[in-house]
Image (cartoon, rainbow over all chains, first blue to last red; front, top):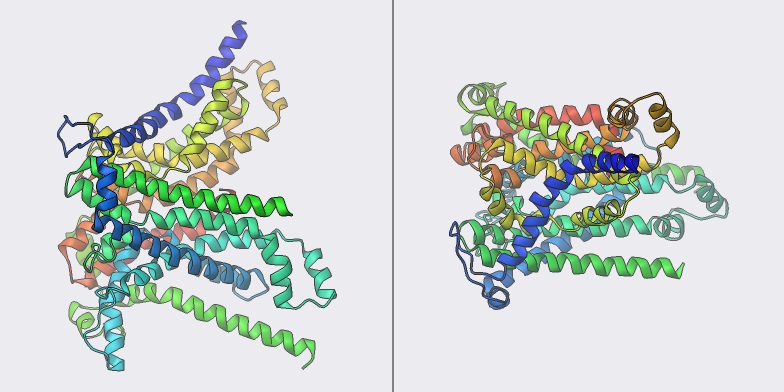
Length: 289
Length: 274
């Protein structure tokens, strides 16, 4: 009995530091955030009132907030789809026999180890100084990509893809290397070409990885903040204000914590629903096999 | 066309594609390097031309006039402390969750897993309130604690899976030899977990080194600035002096690129394990 208590104490104490941090910096903020979203909490003021669903109702009426949902999903959709295609293509190219394979992998991965803040600044240089110079050479004048209402979100997505491609490439390469060489060889002997190998062997076998990458990248791109913060400040006319950027300005510029918390909950609900749907499709697919 | 020339053709197309993509990926970074060696005037004239001479004044200005050195050291300090503590805390928790046969451990595992699905951005507003209530706004301690808390879920998870696979016999032998459970953990378990801890540490260090949003919200105007905070400040102060800004990015990115080259193996392992 004594030994049992001692052993429980040992395991309990090992868990303690993680548990304390976890309660302080996860459980409490999450509970607090949910609670705040039903209040009119303002800035540093310590008193506030319960307002039920007012913040949520306001968010659903607020055109400027709806616009951010639009911009964020557009950004995420572009980055997730084209990003995953690019990563997969890179993985397929780099999984085969190739000279300088490791150097090339490093080239594609390096944008990912750089701070997103620096990435944003570097690309704002590219968009505001380099592109105009190239345009001048070709005779186009007074055209700014980041100032263009239609192009600004795709321009940010290009940066998001540039930054993330290497990361998902590494995951895809690992998955491709997991496919047995015997299987590929057998198919080759049966006369399968590159397309058939891809369509009937490689893609189906790495399908679970594709879903995982989709889920990971949706969550990652939906919460983009640094890129609009550094490159556009959400402009022009709010066209590139992403949800997290909006939450940030609502909470820290307008000081409306309650409203910002409600916006955060909506962001969470969107990310969670997309994740659940993708998960559901993946499960369904596995059942069929 | 026989099969051999066909294969050669495919190989050729592959090589061309991959090198074009590589060039596109490298172009922005190449522009950073090029323009760090130019004067302000040269960049204004053309951002794509080669620098006229080997101009080093930008770097000298940054090191001597900005707070680059102090924020570089500050970030180094934060990474060292955060990463070692994250590794320790996660190893302890992961081991406990793997070996403790109690209902509490089971419940905790599920709860910790749930953090993986709630991004920081969702509760960042309330996080600021909590940090303020604890009196930790603008303090290095606060920033480090938040970094450990945010950085530990995946490491705990990885450590747990690793510890599940460790044989019980080693522990039993150690206990029979008269080790206390604590000595056993420090002397035997931790060294055994080294491979997974190294992976966890490398990924954590990379994240902490470049992290901006958390530092911005929790640490804010604290002094000394972390490297990303100082880069934001620097950008604000020297706006339009791209020669200085880019030179700053260049020298602050070199260490992390070197780190990557050395630690590549662990990074790949960490990403695929997660």
